[in-house]
Length: 356
Image (tube, rainbow, N blue to C red; front, top):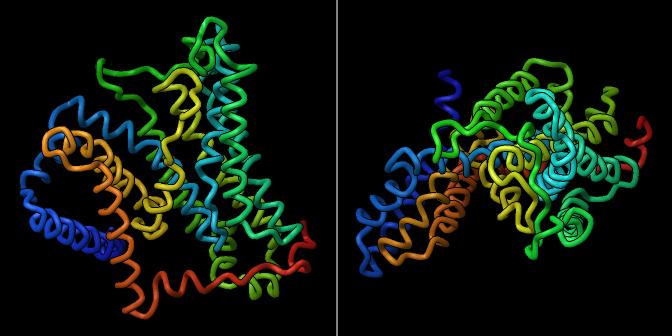
């Protein structure tokens, strides 16, 4: 616990500095920083509905943040969590309408399994390209994001489009495949608790298993890991597949709990925002949960801030970006941290992939 508290100090300080810089900018523009902050807080957690909406917005960020953190620990720069989430949602949304008549628990398991498998295939493809063809995963995952978005667009305009709908959306999933909402009209459901359990499992897996140690060693020094006999190709494909499965679960949960059908804009960019979440959490799976809650609160409160003060919600992205820049600057000044992380993990050679 003390280690977690120490690890959280610098990100917390970076967030405070970023908020302070934005407050100075607001004051210079003639707005009241305190009033803006109060409206932001009220929109994020001012009442029960606002609080549960914040939880709902934070949930996909936890899944995608875990996906990014797992891959980044192996110096695998997975920029494709958004595409993996979309493919997971697509798989779950395609299966959901066929689960009518199923018992509730098996239907939920089938939905989550479909999402995880879809995301794992999408992430594993990028891992295979890295391991066997030495394709930079930054490029492949970004390209796969675009392909996933086009696949979703084709599906909701074509084979999965609701028969009577003029709007591009799929049929609703079966009632048995929907996660229960508690205390309506709130959107409270078990997905956030599931995300926290997954974060604990990822923490244990990374720091208490042989595979987790090998992945972290791979991130520290790929060539040294290969020299000592680590299965570089299997670790690469496996880590990217696991990363994709976590993001795909986020898409399946979103379909099951919130939207109940596929839309062309199922993700507003959670996979990209999750990169910031993972960095603020310093790649700690447990740290991803509070980081995602912070970002979810900022996203949810930004709408109230705009209505009350006329401040653009894009200000939230400025706060997020400044927090990351301050954190990177602090780590660079300290002579380690992210500067070390971004220079480790040299590209794999073709020989290192021969164990696949």
